[in-house]
Image (cartoon, rainbow, N blue to C red; front, top):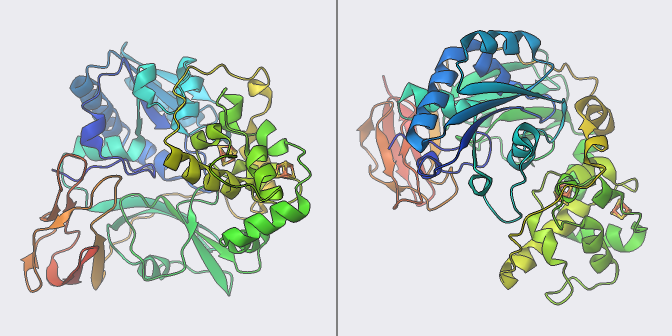
Length: 425
Ligand code: SF4
Ligand code: SF4
């Protein structure tokens, strides 16, 4: 009832994950979205608390082993962790590439196991938990704060801790933005989304806010492919079926039957229909590497694959069978430094030291759906006074999660989607 959900971005309710019985609990400290640093900061500042959370999760699930998957370049942090580990938990340094922090990739990197297509990591005996999730688990209190990195075209990038529900506009007002006009990418350059509304709230799964000049090449790509018509038109006009998108696809390289070039071929010939989709594309993890890194023509195989994924889901095709990694897997990892160059963000400072800020937002907006599953159900009404940490939305059954007030305030609006609170001291 603390409203704990996976803080890595997916928002899977943690209480469900903790009911599984894995052999190994993996701490995902291999944050790989360019320019984001919040997991590293939490683990550096609260090493003991995160390890406590890891041990609690191991006790709750019965996992006999723990592995910390962490970038090998984090030498000082690895040394600190090493001093604190017992026989049950070990460190597994991984390379600095994208998407090392994807949980299926991390399971393979740290254990050599392959999560079968369509299955959860627990079917490979593993449970993967994000650093912030375990930090929150150890705190034992309702989730009312969110860690995130603010980076890109800002004078001093930083990792901060904000009240859940604070408006993005209020967060950015603490930073000097060095580009105008600018766009804001929420979540990450690769897997996040452009935030059209700065009055949108920070949720339990917002990991970062990246500011980009509106004229930046990435801003243009995000804008172009926000319209599926552009994905189709450019596929028909320019895809030469070179297959680079497939050859660099992390899921394909792990042996999954994902082939983005087949999705492009279907668009090329106007055959994006139930009968023609490649069923294996249902296992695309939407990492965006094919569109933002691999394709030499600047096309959009990611969204083409996602279109097929939606059709395939309708067909209810599943292929949960063991996969065998491609022999070229070790040689086709995309280093973060090369990815940053390709994205055109090498010029932005790649750091996010923690900055302590006392936030006193006038209002917060708490969405009732900040997780995978059913939305929470409001349990307050307009005019109620609430205290920080008080439950204001209760879970709607087991596949749901509670939400809590992140400030002391007055309930000013309750809808099916959100609860607005105004600050009161
Ligand atoms: S989408 Fe790009 S990378 Fe993929 S086959 Fe077409 S041209 Fe090649
Ligand atoms: S987004 Fe592209 S590269 Fe990533 S898993 Fe999907 S098809 Fe593969």
